[in-house]
Each structure stands twice: as C-alpha cells, then as structure tokens.
Amino acid sequence: MTDGMAEPAIQLSGVTRRFGSVLAVDELTMTVEAGSVAVLLGPNGAGKTTTVRLITGALRSDSGTLRILGLDPGPDGDEVRARCGVVPPKPALYDRLTGRENLDFAAEIFGASREAVLPAAERFGIANALHLEVGGYSTGMRTRLALARAVLHDPEILLLDEPTAGLDPESARAVLDLIRELAGRGRTIVMCTHLLHEAEGIADHVVLMGAGRAREAGDPHELASRYLAEPIVVLDAEDRRALAAVQGRPGVLAVNWNGAVQVRLDSIERLPGLVADLVTAGARITRVEPQVPTLETLYFEMQQSLREEP
Amino acid sequence: MRWSKALTVARIDLRRLFKSRDYWVPMGLLAAIFFILIPWVLLSVVTASTGNDLVSKIGEVIEVLPGQIQQHLPGSTQEAQAGYALAVYLLAPVAIVVPLTISSAVGAHAIVGERERGTGEFLAHSPLTEREIYVGKLIASLVPGFLATALGFTVYSLLVNVKVGPLLGGWFFPTAGWWILILGVVPPFIAVALSVIIWVSSKVRSTAAAQQAASLVSLPVILAAYGVSSGLMFNPIVAALAVGIVAWILAILGLLSGSRSLHRERLLGLGGDGA
Image 1: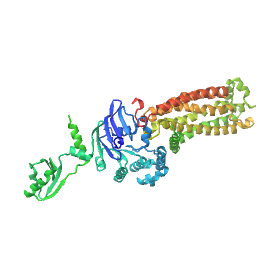
Image 2: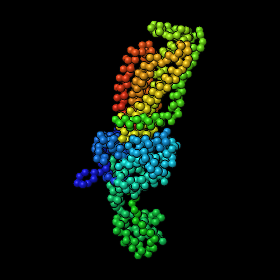
Image 3: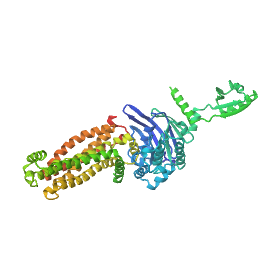
Image 4: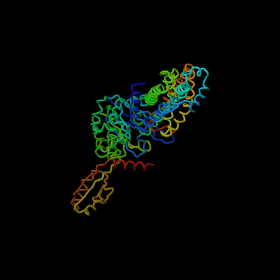
C-alpha cells in the first residue's frame, strides 16, 4: 500500500512460463484492482489457463514477479489458494461421490463451515440433486456444483476459466449473475473466456491475450475509444434510395449497405449535420442509431490492428 | 503438515474406493480365494483322507524343513503334521501377497487417477500442501491392504483352527511367527511397495502405465516377501527383527523420497514422463 492507494489484488510483472519448447506465458504483465472484474480474452492457446494457474501458484513461473493479495504465490501459495476460488475449464468433480460429498470435501479443505454447503448449492439451483452421485449429473449441473464449490469459503478472488462452456442459457446467466453479485460485494473476479458476449457489461478491465502475452489491456470504454474511434451509425429511410446521398458527405469514411445503411464517420459530432443534410435532400429518415461498440467488435478490431502491426 | 487435512484426503479417497464396485469386488474375490478357498481346499484334502498323494508330498516337504522344526511339529499323525505345516509354513506368503496386491491397485491410481479424471486441478488449486496430498493418498492406499490383512488373517485363523485344530487337540493358530509376520513385516513391506508405486503414479501419464509399473514393482517385493515370510516361520524372532527393521528403514526412506516427488504440476497433468 502506498499513498493510501489499495494494493492491486493481482499483479503480474514480466511473468514467463515455458513447457519444454512451448512458451505458454511470455513476459505477461497485468494488474487487476481489488474489487474489479477482469476478463481475459483470447483464443484457445492464448495462455489464459496457464495465467490462472500461475495466479494461484498451482504453477510456478520461470521468471517475473507475481503479487496476489500482497503475497507471492510461490512461497505463500497455500495462503493464496486458501483465499482464491477457482472454477476450472472442466468442473473437476469426483463422479463417484454425491454432490453433497463433493461440497463437504471442499468445505473441509478450504476450512469453510459445513453450514455453508446448502446455501451455496441453493444459490446455484443444485440443492435438490445433492444426494445424487455426480457421475449422473448433466454438464450444466456439474458446472453449477463447481461454482458452488468455488464460493463455499467466500474467496477474495474468484478465478473462472471458461465457466460457461457447454452450459445452457439459464446456467450461463447464473454464472454472470454470480460475477455481478460478487463484484458488488467487493470481490475480485478474473474470468477467462473466448465468448465475447459473456464479458459484455461485466468487465471493468479487459486483457486481450495472444501467444502468452497481454496484447492489450484496459477499461473496455477506453479500449473502445482507442480501437473504435471512428463511430458507426445505422441509418434507414422510407425510401432507402434517398440514403445514397450520404456518400461523399463531409466526415463519411465508409458506407456499407446491409438492408439499412451503415455509415462510418470520422467523428460522432458529424451525425447531426449529416442527418440534417439528408432531410434537406428529401429523405424521410426512420432510423438513426449510433452503434454501441460491443466487446466482440472491439476484440476483432484489436486482433486486426495487432495483426497489422509491423 | 496438518494431519486433519491429509486424513480428509484419505477419507474421501476411501469413500470413492468403497463405492467403486469394480475395484472391491475383484479385490474381495482375490482375498477370498487366497485366504479362504485355497486354504480350505488344501486343508480339507490334507486332513480328510489318509495316505493320499498330497499328504505324501507334504510329508516329503516336511522332511526338507529344518530339523528343529521337524522335531517340534505338533501332531501325532502324518495328516495332523501335514495340516500344521501347510497352515503355518506353506501358506504364509499369502499374508503378504494379497494385501500388497490390493494396496498396489489403489496406489497405482493415486496420482495419475487424479490427472485422468481432471480432479487433480481441484487439488492443485486447493490450499493443501503437496505433502498433505501425498500422505492422504498413501493412507488411502495403505488402509485397504491393512484391512485385507486384518480380515484375511482373522478368517484364515478361524479356518485353520477349525480344519486342523481338532487333529492337534485344540486351537493352535496364530503362532508366534504369524503374529510377527502380520504385525511386524506385512506393514513395512506394503509401505515399501507403495512408496515406489505412488512415486510411479506421479510420474506416468496414464493409469494403465501406472498399473504396469506397479506390477513390475510388486513382483520383486512379492518374491522377497515370499522368501521372508517362509524364513520368518522357521526362525521368527531373529528373522522378524532383521527383516522388520530393514523393511521399515526402506519404507521410511521411500516415503520421504516419494513425498518430495509430488508436485502440483503433476496433478495438473503437466510434467510427467519428462514433459
């Protein structure tokens, strides 16, 4: 802690991890503030799972420094892990045991009260299946149980690695609700995903990973303004032929006909003038809709931009 | 190390094990065959009829036993002596072979099984230390073997006393040599084998490979056990002291070394076979 500023919950600096000749994480630097939701975006093999494993100390880094809740997960790994909850890509449950036995086991290991088991199961709608062996659970039920297990001990950091893979929409929503709720209670969340729509609206901080590196990181709005500085507006009119007049207008960079017309502008401030010109030209405008940049748009824009880097 | 955490790991492993019919049914059958069926058949044949080939052959075996043992063989008839020799000397190795096989089967799955099921990921992210996980796995592997020993020994004792006891004028089993074998020699032998088998389990990539390696490890231990258990019966005090001490030293060294071989990366499915 310095100057009254809270220490980040997660701080990685120049962290590298190799598996033989494969460079899984390469000089990764990232910071996640306490109480924020960070989303690690990237394709398979980008290093997201390895990053989660490095954060809990399940894997040791080859070089670089990690500070998790002010601790080094190397020597202090047991304490770090006791304060983290992890939902791995596969739920990692004991099939021969019942849901209740799986949760009891986790409660004992993490030092949580057995009384926390039932509320956690109820929270994810799995309480009525606790007496059944997990081997008979559906994919959704297994993930719900893994989620309940991860939050039993009320962790300060929750690490979710592709938590909604294979889930039905209801279960996926439960995951996202959990993230919002925990974030609202000041917990730090790290979610790995390649499903961009999931991260939409919950991410305070986005880290775009590729080839083991944090290719870009920041607040989604800040990234949007950086990568999507040229706003897109959808226009429509009773007679669409009248919209042809947008071509060549000041500030119009590109026009894309796709039913309605998508117009890329050099600045959103051009929009009122553009609409006024179209009306003057006789167009009866029925739709003016500035496109809110989605994380997906941002992701592909960033990927494209990074590919074009020399 | 927090023993309560290690015991939690052991307890959960044992609970899974006893719910796995595909494990305990064959193991139960194995124990029943070696501790009950084979002794019952052999002792029935030996004690039920006179002058048959088996009794003659066992009589020949008795002749090659050390003179001191021959002189002290109880029983006034050849059948009684043959029954005693069979029960006390010739079936002794069963006491090691069966529990060792049962424990090996569990130990072979101990670490690699976690990797294959994916549950190693949960353990790797847990606050358990590697040593707590190792000790938990070790206890979970030892318990079935020790239980099999205790149960098998009890049943075998009853069986032997029922079949041969009447010929010898009453219950005579367990003998001092068997007590020493069961209490002083079987436990360290199982521990020695498991120290190697769990180490192997943490190194290989599949349960099948672990089982093959466990078989290779078990074989010399079984052979050694066979010789040792036979020798113990002949000269129990001296042999038990020597064998017990050596076996415990080997077991402790093996277990210490094994506990250092378990790393979280192996639980995650990384780092095996030199990867």
